Picture 1 (tube, one colour):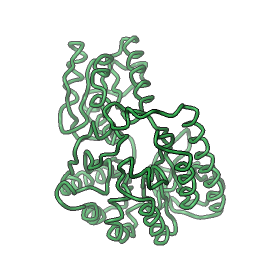
Picture 2 (cartoon, rainbow, N blue to C red):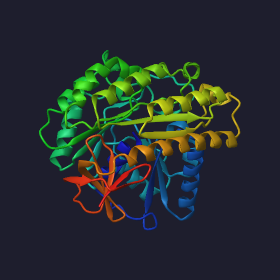
Picture 3 (tube, rainbow, N blue to C red):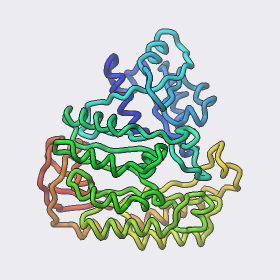
Length: 399
C-alpha cells in the first residue's frame, strides 16, 4: 500500500516539481509505515534532523493517523493516505507560508521511472488482529470499482509499463464490502487486456483465500499472472493464531501452498512471520519452525513483535529484545539454509524473464513465477532468455 502511495505522490509532484537528492531538496516527503514502533522512532528522528537542516518536511502514509500528535510536532504538514485530493496544494502552502497543518489526500497519478506500476484495488480491511495498528489508520474496507481499476491498468500499459502489482491490505477480501469476494472477477477482466505484460498479486490472508482458491487457480494459468502467492502465516501455532484473532488455521495455509505447488511447477510462495509476540511460547515458536520446514516458502518476511498504541496487545508484558532477536535469527538461518539448497538445484535452468529495473550496473529480471534473476545486460521492459549460472540465498544470477 505504501509503495502504491509513493508512486502516486511522485506522479503528482512531477507536474510542478523536480525530484532531486535529499541534500538539494527544498522539501522532503516521508511516506511512512506505522506497523513497528522502532520504525516510528526512526521516522520521527529523520524528520527532526531534516528540520534542523532547514528542510520543509511533510509526513504521509499510515503514521500520521496512528501517531498524529507526534507527526505534527516534527513536520510542516501531514497527508492522509486515503481518498482523492491535491498534494501540490499543501506543498505550495508549506513552502510559501511555513507551517500548515492541513491534511490533504492523494490523486492517483504515477511516476514513469519504472516498468512496474503499483495499483491499489482497495483500502482498509475486515480484520481485527490484536497486534495490528495499520487497521487503525486504513480503517474499514473500501473496494475500488472494477471498471476504474481496469481503466487504470489500461492506462499504465499504454504508457509502456510491463508489470502491474496489485496491492491492498488483503487482496482476498476485495469486494466483500459489496457482499462478494470479487478478486476472481477482477482478474478475469485484467487478463483480457491486450498487451504483453505481467500481473503480480499482493498479500492475501489464508482464511479468505481458501474460500476462492479454486476460482483463482484457473486464472493463474494465464501467462499474464506470475505464479506467485503471498500468504502471511504469522505463526505455526493454531492456538496462538486464535489468540491473535487471525481467523484461519495453519492447515488452511498448508492446503493452499500444496495446491499451488501441485498446479504450477515454477512457483513462488511468500509468507510473513511474527516472532516474539508476548503470547508466543517456546512451543509456539517450535511449531512455527516445523511449519516452515514443511512448506519451505521461497520468501519470508520476519517481523519482531512491536507494541503499538491503540491495539489490544499494547498492555501485554513484552519479551526482552534478546529473545526476539534470537528467535528471528534462528528462523532466518533456517530459511536461508533452505533457500540456498533450492537455488543450487536451479543451476543450468533456462527461463524467459521480464527485465524490471537496473540495479548497480546490472538488471533485475523476473521469471513467470516472479523469481528474481540478476543479469548483466538487458533493456528495461523487454523479455529475454537466460540460463542460470549462479545464485545467492535470495536470488539467481545469469551472465
